[in-house]
Length: 187
Image (cartoon, rainbow, N blue to C red; front, side, top):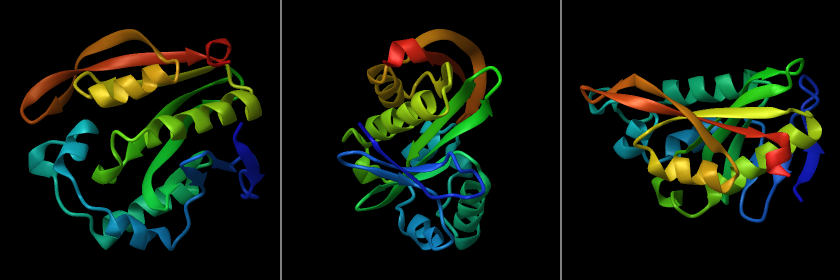
């Protein structure tokens, strides 16, 4: 069971989430240097839907923009495993319909395939279903991002459909896979 610690007075539901291998916490200004220290990786860029011709190294301006966006987001965390390795968010949180969408990015190529993303997803899902009392979480992922699809499936997400030719990457159209998870399926 994850440990919850309230840390943000603006969005009091945001919590530090701790698992066996990762900690999720609110972003802070000094994270700019941590994002700058991450090794830019063209394959990670492509998994997020970026093309090779738009890939470039992390700059202080880009890192600052990422950190500002995460600080202002009511349900966003940085992922730490000894150091900052990525981010995870609940987007479009609708407390009336009790749903949201999930976005995650492991940005350190040395931390891919080690289960850190799956653990971070599970921590956020526990928070979403137990603390926010959400009923449904959705995610969309590029069909060629098999690693992410496997991680979502490990957490209980099921494929609900496909949006054909939804992303233009490296001069070709690619499908998005639509996945969803209900609270009763997570328990």
